[in-house]
Length: 280
Image (cartoon, rainbow, N blue to C red; front, top):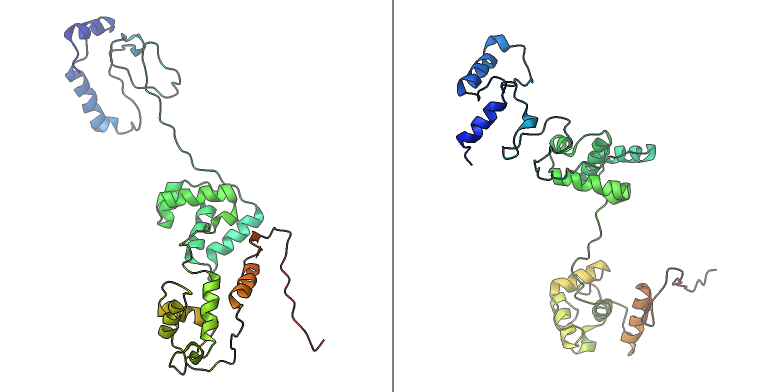
């Protein structure tokens, strides 16, 4: 946006020297600041204004920059609203928290992520900014801000990973139990011409019996490994002969999941398992 000569002349009339500033006036000041004569001047402002008072500047003039300590808008000058400044969350640690965080930060057996998070909190408690902590720990400033904020909200327990829902289970506990029960039977009882089960044969038999629509041999192998079942090496002495096995197993598995008759158990309800102790 240009400035008309008429406006410049109106400004000049307000200057005690009676004229507007010229480029040579500024050049002389710049030459002084660049010379050895200004070697002891550091961080000061050299005003070249002809003693013109900017507070009396016309309304249609360009707004002057705000001076230090100026908290009020000058009359006739609209200033844009300032952007909010996000300050770091201040942290204060108790003696117990500081002791625990130091063990996490300097412990040889502490996982790497837990060590980083404890270090962030310890540095933040010393009053350091997020940017400085990020530079010292070689982490992104967003990572520092996240764990600083989580600790302020939930203290030390908040430094643990949050629970993730994960992928929903593909097979139910009852289906897993039925496949394991099948592995404990002899193949001849199912009409299979085998002396012992293998994981591929168990997977095919589970689909044949409509236990599940589809299942891989590796999934069956993983289930059997959890209970150290190896039907391809040993002949099991456990034979499932209960025709009502599915309903019975479902009731027991529901109790393991804290469910009774389709209703989840409350916090004050317990499942007690008792076994016969003939030696007592």
